[in-house]
Length: 284
Image 1 (tube, rainbow, N blue to C red):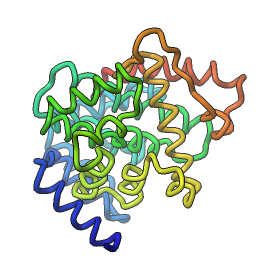
Image 2: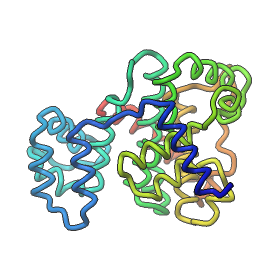
Image 3: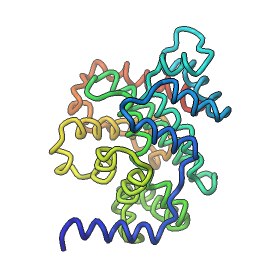
Image 4: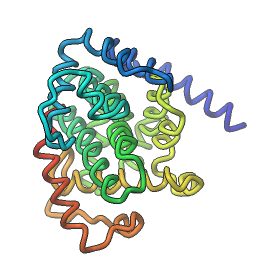
């Protein structure tokens, strides 16, 4: 069976089995018009300004320490000029993520903390290493585990069993999910971002996030995966999302070395990540 046929059958299975989340209308429109490389700031501003809650959130984020705001930004035009279109797109997506949850209990809270924590930490690491665009790192960190949200929405009891195995038996998520699901959360996540209209490279990153061989074909994507993987471990270290069981110390493995981060630089990076967690996590 060809890979194309297998992919088609997998997509059909996911579409039949899961009710895929829909982004808010304004977010969909923002993503749609920003796919146009010639889109104007004025057009983006007019669209976002139709949503007062989103406008207020963007202004709040734009004035936060995370984006290094040095003066008070009072309107959308200033925010877009100060931050750039990619950062504004990421803010719109991030602020809409809680809308994809069907419920919001403890499991959903931990998933959310992991998503936004990974986005924030990935952006910090990207700024330090200068290997990838910090905004690409932010959106990659935010969405690389979106499949978990969808699976939890549809099968909360099965998802809870998977997380129990991850926590109690110290196995990886993909190992624990194989016994309960016909598809992986990575495959679900890739399908979702494709339906949402994100670029193909983000779909590829999510689907093959755990496949070192596939990632080795694209150096920049491999670097982005390493940044996100390191950010996930920093989330564990600082208690953003699911914690390690017992007193197990979080290991960064060889990820700092892969990213060219020297031992002497790690304390500064960790302190910066800790700071953005305290300042940025509640903003979204």
